[in-house]
Image (tube, rainbow, N blue to C red; front, side):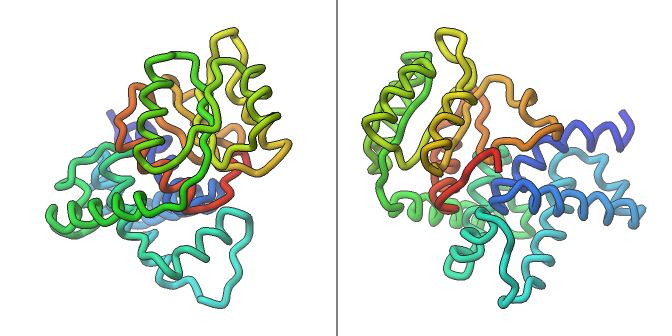
Length: 264
């Protein structure tokens, strides 16, 4: 496999990571583009990308970290995600979230995440532990679960409650979701894409977002169907089967950015 083909195979997931890290599809994609441009300008860097995901993410991290440090404090970010992100990032270091995302959403080992971030495995594990503590301190909210598989729905309910949040309701169809939202506006939505009666979780979420701006996390067995770059993509996207730490990290990210309309 050529370097170009290997990098292309990893790009949808690097773009997912970039969006979750920055809180914006446009900003995340801009950093990914800058990473590829840096590789094109540096033959040694380009050659290193043949080593798989770790060197690609390491190259991205160097670009992102440098750009982050160079952003002037008085520049107002554009867009809902970026404004919320900058407000929080002035108070909270992004390293904790980065370590948690790499080891959960992106499924790197702590040693691999350390290689990407340029630190030891012990430091990564410490950052992850601190991030989990931050998650547990999040302000509680009400959560709507849109999921047609009962066992998964129950698993998500238990996880949400363990984080100190309430369950606004559970729905297996778009109609059920509409009925729940008519009585209770959730503060967060966890949504499957293919529902029991053939209806779409995307449509159910659009119904909710027409009423209020609510953070949304999509959960699907087919993430590649949404990671095409052909249309605005969900910011928070988890692949089935999922690890609970992955959902935990996504919930933290969604609440971190406050209002995270996924199709913005």
